[in-house]
Length: 161
Image (tube, rainbow, N blue to C red):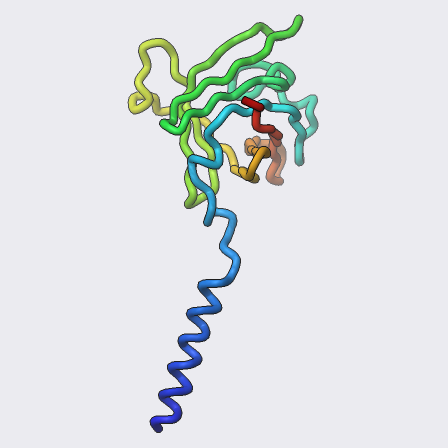
C-alpha cells in the first residue's frame, strides 16, 4: 500500500512538472506592452469577403486610405491613428483609447472626439489579435458577409524610432 502511494505521488509530481514546462497558448505572453508603440499599417488583405464589397473601414474611409497609416499606441491606452492622405483620401488624425483582452485575444479601441472621455464612449471596435510579436502586429476585423466568417486583415510593422 505504501509503495502505491509513493508511485502515485511520483506520478502526480511528474505531471505537474510536465504541465509547467508545456508551451503556453497565444495569450500567455500577450499584454499591453506587446502592442504599445508606433505601428505602420503596410497591407490590408481579405479573407472570405471580396475587397470590392468593403466600402469603409471603422466607419471612417475606404480601406485604401488606411494603407500607410501610422498608429501610435501608448502604454496608458491613449493613442492616435494618422491617415496619410492621398488624392482620394484626406489626411486625418483620429484620437483613440485602446486596450488588449488576453481572455479572448482581442484588441479594442474607441474613437475619441474633442471633449470625449473614454469612459463615456460606449461604441468601439473589437478586432482579433492574430499576432503581436516583435516587429509584427496582425489584426483581423470580423465583417458580415454571407454565412461564413469573413475578415479584413491588417498587417502592421513596428516603426523605427
